[in-house]
Length: 423
Length: 82
Image 1 (cartoon, each protein chain N blue to C red):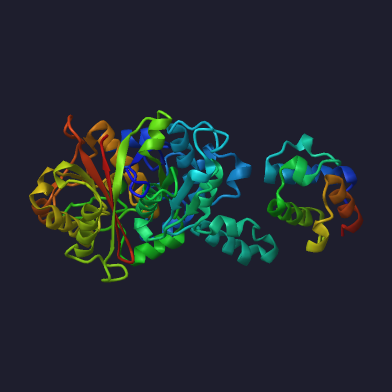
Image 2 (tube, rainbow over the protein chains, first blue to last red; image 1 turned 180 degrees about the vertical axis):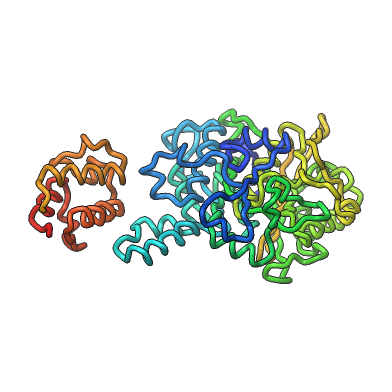
């Protein structure tokens, strides 16, 4: 293959999520149909209209030593934990260069966040107001900058081919992985650590999302609150965490004998140009992204058997996405098992594309689609357009090459679709 | 009541332990903050601010660069504490 159209594969995965402190426990939770949503028990939560969130299963303070952690925003802590796992999982034993199987000049990092170091920003503003200028932490800027997770992951692995931070709200994590695929496909790098992270469980984002009427206020039933495709869905549940993959050119992976989880086939990207927050109701922008994916890769709709949907549990968004699938894939949509894992993880905003790419890759690797939980009354519009995996995990075809999509869309009208395929 | 040299070293040890995770017993007069105690330039600002509060002393930014070792900081505080 020409150096500008190289095959890209996934050789490592890592995650820290509301379901578990690593990719394996997260996957177990997803397959078991477990909800990661809990009541918010912090003092500040009492006055909030929304008092539930999908909080991280393993606090980063249990993993990262305190002197290091105090210089890192929570979003960067999540990213480092997931990246460290993915890096080891890919078979690398040290930083690039120290581990001779990867050249630092050919290694990149692309980690995205939707909001960046928002808790650091707000906490330090509290310090400024309460304790004065002198007490504001000198680490504030490198902690709050949105490129902090990518820069810190770049430092962790020794990435010198380029470190990037796409920002597109809830599409950020997927855009990061798409960007990384392109870095390798076009020859800029051989290996890229890519994913998304978010840590926004703080009174201000919760109040703000709550006032947008975007979040579920089902405080009485936290585990049942995130219910994509259910007729009674009333908004998303905020989650936190990170998901990271190691992407690699197929040649590079083969040369070092790496285990390959899946091929990262490519991405389809578009923008709605419709509204700053409302999804375009017919899913035209999403359909455009799906069409771009088909036009720019050798993906065959006949081989797509699973879609990890964006589906956040908002009334408008969930159905628009399914209409787009039907519009682009027609009858091929019938053999796509559609799962909304946000029913279990909540919505990790910029972390979603990372965690859901890990889930999509594992769904192909294990040939199992995770369920969508909490669908009691399936929305007829959802049922008419797609085959939703409800209640329990579903086996995918045990033989032959199969592919899966991971959709992520963000405020601002950003649409990113990633495609993965068995090897 | 002004702090003694011993009290200042003990206080700095607690501060360095909090910020850089270095065991308190390793914080000695001849140790360099940067080279021996894992205190980078940003963390040094934190050490200075914490020391100012603890020992009622003002350490202007221009003077911070002269505080290379625990001994430098201890002597500065001994001389300038309120």
